Image (cartoon, rainbow, N blue to C red):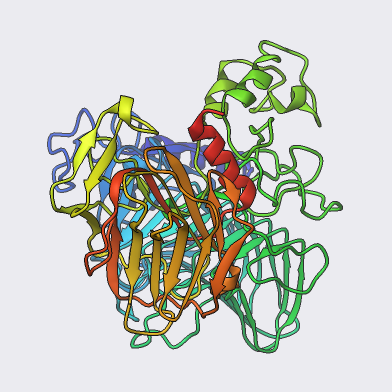
Length: 637
């Protein structure tokens, strides 16, 4: 193939023209004609980069490529790749033919410092590749690059000199639909011009994105659980940074011995111009730390609130943020509450590839939700399916109604594809769940992996004697379930605890954790000797006036609202209804990281006696509507 190209070049030169069509060059480390599969030292004798005789190494393909060529890489792991100067001087496309999952470039050994270097006057494209490394940088962009549908995965560990996923240095770079994780810093831009669109930048050790003296647009992107910081921005007034239609969440980890930056969603240094619009920032109230930047924030959902047009301070209702699912539930306050005047750029989509505006107004965050909760009770259940089914096989669905929102994939008709989407949230519980023990013949936690260990001899009962699911647990007055290693929701953070109980004695502890020796440090939910639902901590208590009858299944819930930390602010619920007549001894609640969570007893012999089913703990305050809906669903009302 190379000889043919040389002859063709000569012919074009003699004809006095400079036109040259692009070529496709193939790379496969175990091609069908390769006598040494996986060993680049033993190659196909007829190797020429054709589909039948591909090169073993990407280096070889790049060496024989010219501007405009496309290098297609088949499934495999490729180690020593690219020439010492990287992708310099040739505007080529390097693409994984079988998708990023199956086409892996490992830069761990050879390119310790700079990884894959891109330095070309024209645009170099990397598409559908996984790039893995341990130290240095995965991709260094010195000039023009488009990096699309790729995953950059690091193995850095806690080393401040370790891996950056993508380093943009004075160049123009587009990162589109990429995932960057487990690096020291996901993306850093120094004097660059960068677009980050529809990317997932998650679980990086220190920061998600670091921007220095650069013009950057972050759009439709999820930035989650990156050490202490989601985005750090520094620069001058000539640098404009935009964060649009994105979700920045879960940056609340803090290691004082290692990090020197307070945790936050966004940290603004020096004097750049930063605009945040239609975005969710939810990082336990540490959202924006602005030292001296020129900052505009509007139409955002911000924990703790923030001054600006259209901003809200309401839980976004993620599907399950404990497991990293930051899609919006159907009743999220972020749906259709973004900037009503926002006009998407041409072809703009949300992080899943949906049209950026579905129901007439943009949603806040990276997810443009499709609604399923047609019967608005916070759950997708048979009530909703009854409404959905009335549009079955309808073929004239158009925006903005889309057949009363039954056309979930927006293709103009309601069919089996829409059923699949509808089922994604079927009977989904409220987001924020960190413990869910169904107690259906086992002690496994279905939410956060905090499985139970048992002291005593409790027995399981079958479905006919349970309230929810396929079983329940019987505690006979000397049994306790311990979630070893899990200290519960602590401090003053909002939370919800709930369970179904069927007691034989009107007293006993249901939830217990924290520190009983410090003021306000204990979290204890119990029945008192009168049969009232009762919360107590060191120095304070609250109990309701409903008497919980023995021998009957009763649903109980206790809520500590966000931003409120006293016994007076606690909410008690019995069978989905809030207790309005309560007796309170005032005290501050500041639960300490002390004892492991216990279900059915404290640590000093106050045991619950009876049946317990479907135990749940959430790290947020569920609303009264959510609690009532969950009770009604489980009670079969």
